Amino acid sequence: MSNKENIVFKIYKPFGMLSQFSSNDAKESRKKRFLGELYDFPEGIMPVGRLDEKSEGLLLLTTNGKWSDTINRSGIEKEYFAQLDGEISLESLKKLEKGVEIGFSGKKYITKPCVVKRVLQEPELEAPAPVIRLGRHRPNSWISITITEGKFRQVRKMTAAVGFPTLRLVRVRIGDIHLNIMKPGEVTQLKKGLQGIP
Image 1 (tube, one colour):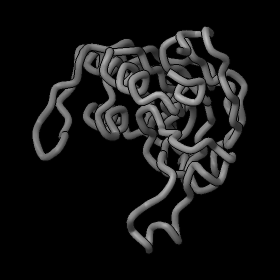
Image 2 (cartoon, helix red, strand yellow):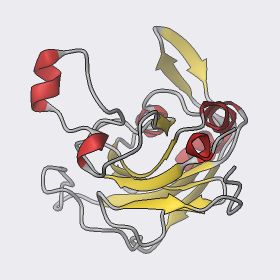
Image 3 (cartoon, one colour):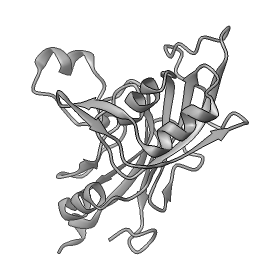
């Protein structure tokens, strides 16, 4: 396997950017932001999993398709900070941990048990994008949620299912790889042999 096949980057995907490099939809291509604007990535690079357009934080990119599949399918932990509309209750936290029913591909799905904690102090994150409506005159709360699966918009659907819609969602960890103090749009190439990098 050549070195090129083992290139891995970690980026802070900004709010409002798609987790892809292009679109077949000409209209979307003109109006949306894509990963390629952040850095001159090598040919063959692909995102490891996704973050939806309105979510931000840690996204891994690799030229190693096999490693990408391993990360996506092996139940590796993914941790998020979610800012919720309202003061979440202990009862709702427990429901999230046990698993809740969400819609996925037109079917009902029960999420796997996960780790959920109330974050009492606001996490040290970059300021939110101005377009995020945080409802400053209403109470809100932060949680840390760690899941081992990654259905489309899963965390948002989970918090909405218990009555607390997600206002802001930031992924801060994938396995042993942390977002740390990166800023939106920042790109770092990871060294081989570190933190499970092939």
